[in-house]
Length: 157
Image 1 (cartoon, one colour):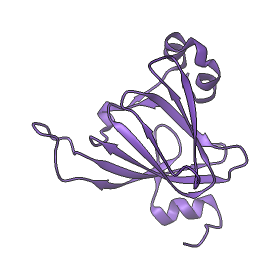
Image 2 (spheres, rainbow, N blue to C red; image 1 turned 180 degrees about the horizontal axis):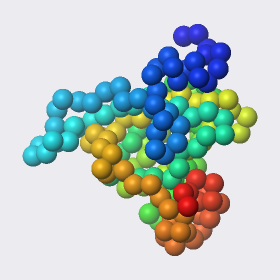
Image 3 (cartoon, rainbow, N blue to C red; image 1 turned 90 degrees about the horizontal axis):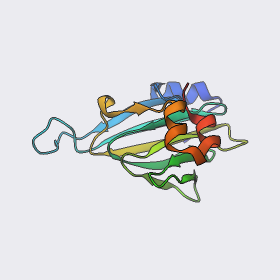
Image 4 (cartoon, helix red, strand yellow; image 1 turned 90 degrees about the vertical axis):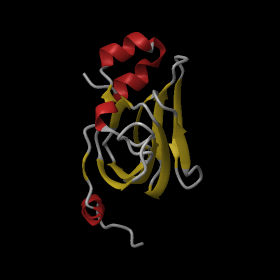
């Protein structure tokens, strides 16, 4: 695949749209199979893009989310674990997959010096916007007092 000449080329090539948490995305897969007794898909997948200076604000969903690195520069994934621990993982060719467990507050941003990151996210059971929650700084500060730097960086007012 040819390297894009600019970020907008990549967004246009894949038909990515703005995501409420930041960056751009496109759903690429939604399984026809349903979680028994529900209308929820068993699995979904997206392409997700963040450019330098963009951030995925802290959010959580009720399903496991497996991240996949595709192209560009390293992406940092920040997690606030139920134990109170703030964890940071770099997604790159050297570490091309990372699992964020269901219910975990998390966000991401390109690593320092990065131009952009193109990644994928697979969610099981499938992603539903009704089950997506953005994290407010005040609420997160109360729940994670030792993660102030991460919350300042990626939280919403």
